[in-house]
Image (tube, rainbow, N blue to C red; front, side, top):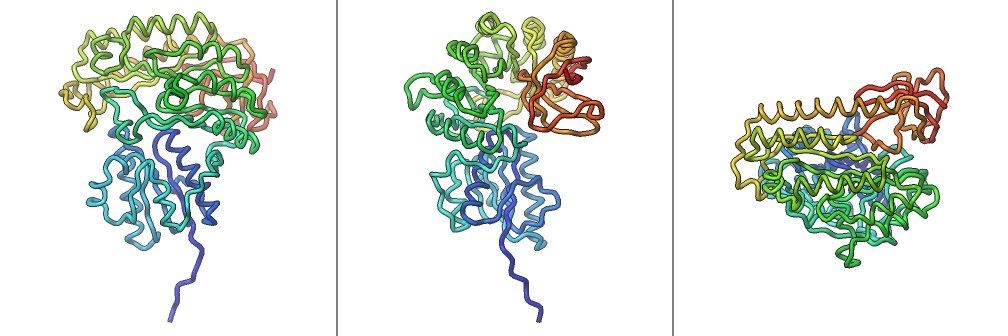
Length: 437
């Protein structure tokens, strides 16, 4: 009689969604590994693991669809006997756990965003608090995300994040500095600070906005050369952050502020607690204080009630402000948000058309700004080598979402993870081309 060969369990963690999810997966893999479980990050291809954990996203319709399709794919593999266990965690699981348990019962367990200890218990592992700050990073070794807080206290009418991540909880400066030191020890040179809302940092534990204090502390960590800020809220923006950016030589002249719209009627409907005029004044102050700063933003088109005139206001806002980087989302009608009570009355084809128009406006702005860089020399971090080019970024570009600098490999010798002085010789809307200076 044939007997099944006993083998050690191997776990693949598949991450969907944003960088905050990625950090959660990195912590999960580290906890599993320290619990003597063979675990690794995976894109799901060519896996030989017998246990799969899917860290899901539940932010907007496209993300939810991707998460559900991934769960169904592995539920089918489990029913075919290709894997032994399937667990689901993350935002989609937090938001729709009861429905998912009924609709996809083949999953062995659904866990919310704050239920990592319960998930680890399925492997007979106790969550080790002393490992906070130690992560098995899945990004290239030279950069990593640093999540400084969890959750959000904002009340944006379109956003479901507080439903999935809960209220704002800051981490202490001491714990973040220790994690930064741990990351620097394994070769990380760039820290990308992330949170649902960076500027709220510290209000819960220090009773004041403490992002500037954190930047001064992180600036002292040896081995870290770049510190980048993502997701700052424009309402009541703490201007002392600008002093910290200027004072700290490691903090990139880069700021990601999702303004979301440029029409006051829509900003009010979004509950953004800021007007277009206040947004413009903030941008003026930022650029006055830090003349060469790069501003990245995102906009939402097709919010309920968005008229042609509202959209024109948005277009004019983008033309006037000339953001360095801009992304566009079409509005997604999310259950249990306050905007869900409104009629989703902008047709999908109109949403898509408006998104394309806005991106065309931004392409012209981006091309002009990139063209202005021709002839200048920048410090560039080399991310990878592909298709005959080294691919890197200046301090004004974040990975995956911003410009890249392409340097021909056959005539330049560079190393991935190193910095190099690169002279820009050509430009397109979203790429720069350079040579070793």
